Image: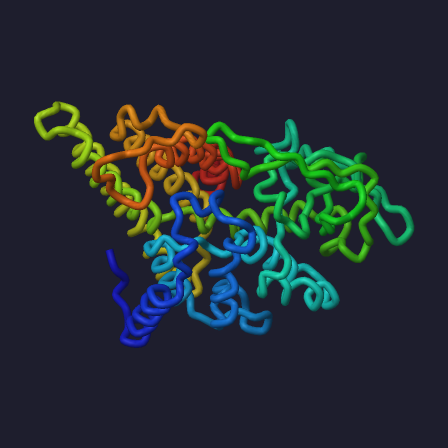
Length: 393
């Protein structure tokens, strides 16, 4: 499905396609770039986009954004997703950056924003805790004011790529006597600070993507508080809205659907009754992708006319993650015995294998994608948001 583009926007789309084809680093073309690349390799495309001035499509031009229209931003997201490029680190560009330029003071903007854009600072997200995942209002990590510093103690978990991070943005409790949402602050913490410890969590797919982060008497300058003390819940909701909007994942689902078709054609005999069932299921998923894309295009058209998209971010999050989980589920079924392989025991194939990754990497993707309906606010929470905002329940 394509946007009905003006001549100017069509030319922009062609420019983006050509730029990706000519500049995306070959060494980043690995089966699972989120976990198979080093920190420096992960930043190669980020720095190319930064040099081109395209690293932060959503940012206002005054802070380093490209000054694109809503339609141009959508085109860029669509083309990079369809091409399978590794997106710039979301925690830096999509999440904490907009919080800083929206709610931070001038000194914070001057200090942090240029280094986020350039990739000199790698950020991670200190939200989830044991017992405080979907219910973020129950965070227990404490920050106690001590002169010009806060003393922070607590434990953050499922912290993605914290092993690479220079900074972490944290939700901390600064007023334990207030009601849960009213006593939280948004604090920026240097990961090199004494008392910060990162310990790996190896997930079921065998990868080191997430971590525990322990904070023990960490002294954080009070100047690293974003906005007002005890107003962090407002900033946290703003950040999560930006995160969820990017979760429709149309380009990613389209790529993995094409790969699924290749695998079914290769692995399932046409005379096998399962072949027809796979074809029917693929058709159902394709219709779901088309319906979600049509909704996304409608929202883009509304936003280009200045209309508030409302709870669309929650809708995209639910349907986008469920669709991708279904695709990885079908792929895992289609690869048959190859699904027994994992990272530690890869299958060495001696015949044609479609696509850039297969066997154990498909299994890893299936296992890893189970998290999608949980992170960024669980899908159950998103349904509650829609019920309240749309149905008035």
